[in-house]
Image (cartoon, rainbow, N blue to C red; front, side, top):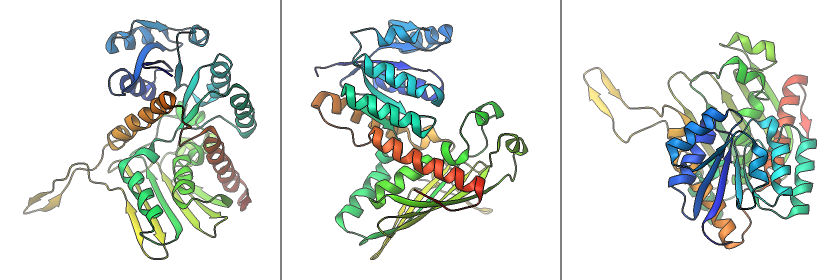
Length: 333
């Protein structure tokens, strides 16, 4: 395709706004030509802030506009399948936030449409593009730790989203855990064969109404013989805590840190350091890098490194983890 890739962002919540801002000013080869949200007033406000000429509350206007090359879907997960289908049927290339869809049948239907239409689709697993995780992948491929045999993932939020979000989130094993399920596949280069999961409500009592927990852990086995444990928490009041570890036969990789700035304060009371406050701060560069990868793939006729198939695989693991938690049994994949 020729430059610039003319993009529209669909859904202008917190994450949609960041994507729109990145496409508008930080991603080379892209041009943000339209922003869309069912709340037209909000779409108008975002368009004004980002200097975009067009905005709309009618998403069909975007799908039917032949001048738009690609869409960035950042709307609620329950809308993803329909939006991906409409975009693909209208020849639009697609960047869609995780998770790919709400359930596995929808994911299968989406993959079939993507195969039929041959449009490019990248799923927003931005942690793969974070410099630390990307470097870990290179080190593993280079053989620095031998054969990878165990992944340990920690995803801790400093608090819980409101009840309205939790109600429609799919639960902690899907909403929060899915990033680490994808990373485990990515770093171990293996597929999950079974999942067990446990969880508790330790702080946020309202989660019981929705069958969710604020502290959970999943244990997965892989076809390579490797294994993984993935902790999810809504209770890290000290800050945003995202870390990973890969144990190999000849060494171990520690990925990520709590440190926000590379400075420590020393006083007679002791030492202290700033902790990463939130996920946009921790993964600011990753969000830009993943979108740049999407645009570069369109310009160069390449397949994204994170495909819809990857999105479905991660969803399969998340669904199995949720089922394992609900039934108390190990679930095979």
